[in-house]
Length: 253
Image 1: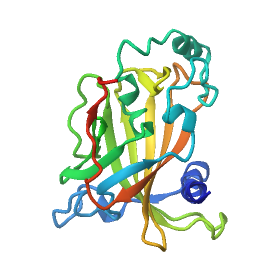
Image 2 (image 1 turned 180 degrees about the vertical axis):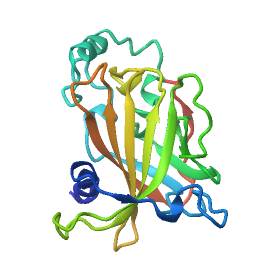
Image 3 (image 1 turned 90 degrees about the horizontal axis):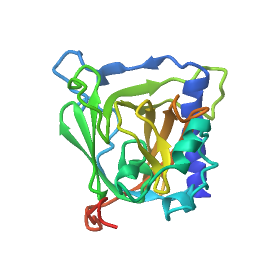
């Protein structure tokens, strides 16, 4: 219930941003500002550190390999259903470790700044690396890849006055990922196509007892396989160090 409360608290702000067309104030955190600031030095929120997945929803899909055909939670269209039925989950065990599936895998994640404009996310499960490039600094888009091309920006929101006091101002990381090779949301073969675009909102939450959580709302738009957007909020808890880190390749059963 505690994690459901966290999700509701953060999701309300994300949904306000989508539904009420918030005007985002990008402030000093964006490139091109004076004084030589970078996205890293101007970050309004510190997302770095070691984080572990909290499996607060979709348990049977994330903690085990669900049965073929058990994918009602994903709004697949007819083409998506056909692709799911024909998926061969044994041919490439890393298909569920792409950008639209990786954060759903029970794992530990190490978030750190690779340089002043690139936020790096490493997973111990699957030994994958995502790089979030900040707008204005991102390298040219190359060939499609498992982790795709992610462009990030810091956003600071001020909710409209008519929304109510339950939604407070705050800063979050907004990430859009494109150029992904086809993959799976879950290990039993629920597919996303090369046309998929994933938008994510990373929000940090600190509790009164000192616990820190990272909530990542993932919104996938896939005109090839989905009849509507697939939306989920994933929860991660901060750990003090890397003592529980356990690297294992996605190619090993």
